[in-house]
Image (cartoon, rainbow, N blue to C red; front, side, top):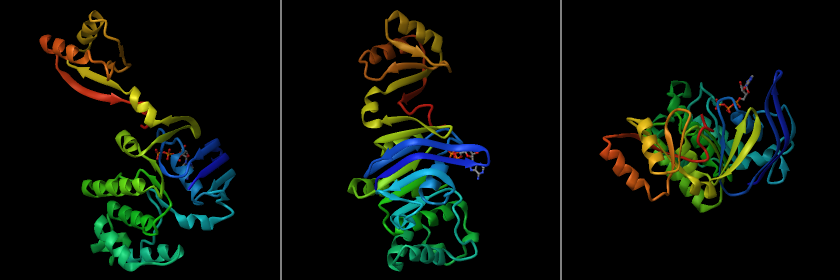
Length: 289
Ligand SMILES: Nc1ncnc2c1ncn2[C@@H]1O[C@H](COP(=O)(O)OP(=O)(O)OP(=O)(O)O)[C@@H](O)[C@H]1O
């Protein structure tokens, strides 16, 4: 499903949380929404799904104005932190209720998916007895049940156990590769964004700062090293005329593709310098946290 945003301004009291002039998110594939805490990511997701409607500007999904045509949201699934469900009712009640709002409720399909996610055993219990992770799984299940064409996930893996995260990532990969779904995902974990997304929209203070095409940017990745003696390493690199840069935190940034790296490593070993950390710096670095 294609998303088209024009002059979207969301204000909380006097604070402008979101001010997006033009943003088009194409149909199909996965797109990242990244930005520091408070950048406006959740506000964007809430606006896309009519949880917030008190905004100026326009949001269209597949050519339909969302605020005027809420039925389009039957084709959209969303997982937000702290989303409301009926806490005094059982998991089954919530599944039936929220699925019912969108059409048919298929209990057997729900049971199968619940078993895969690992909450089948607690569906007879009231949601108020659930842990944070269990509640999140229930919300995830509600979002997935009606096979959404657009899935919006706000920090989807936070608070889930490792096994569920793995299952969920595989499940998302499968959905993306089938090509029938558009995924919009926010995460502060760079590898999660890089794993799924072909493009990333960087939001900063409510505004679209940058669009990063990860398919092309990945070629420009750099290696960042942190060693037991960065100053000495820098001297060695300068002596070797090896192009590098020292980052503000003292770590050293090098081109990842340079074949000279092996030679550098040998020199470091000869000088008894150990590498404490090697990280890959991509275009996304410093934009997530
Ligand atoms: N209910 C609210 N009332 C007042 N201000 C709010 C409310 N919700 C969000 N804000 C403010 O709006 C701005 C955007 O918040 P939002 O939650 O959209 O950011 P975010 O990018 O999702 O942040 P995070 O990465 O921390 O989840 C922030 O300045 C936040 O303090």
